[in-house]
Image 1 (cartoon, one colour):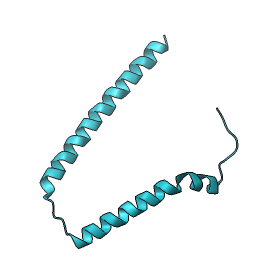
Image 2 (cartoon, one colour; image 1 turned 90 degrees about the vertical axis):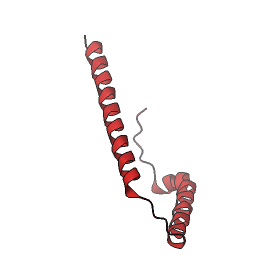
Image 3 (cartoon, rainbow, N blue to C red; image 1 turned 120 degrees about the horizontal axis):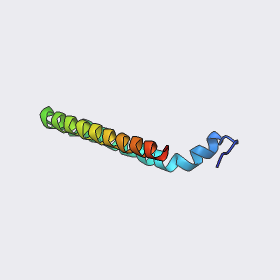
Length: 77
């Protein structure tokens, strides 16, 4: 469905204000906990996990694109 009317800022804010408030409170709590209880995590496990996740998502996106392209080619016949 195509809609020509743009939503007003007040309407959008009315729909998302609760979610924004919860996220704001969550961020404030995490910040307070970070400064009250200093947490030191070793960097190596996080680095390895981040690299593995990046590779996994890269291969996943590549296979998804290949499947999409194959479907597009078959649909175009």
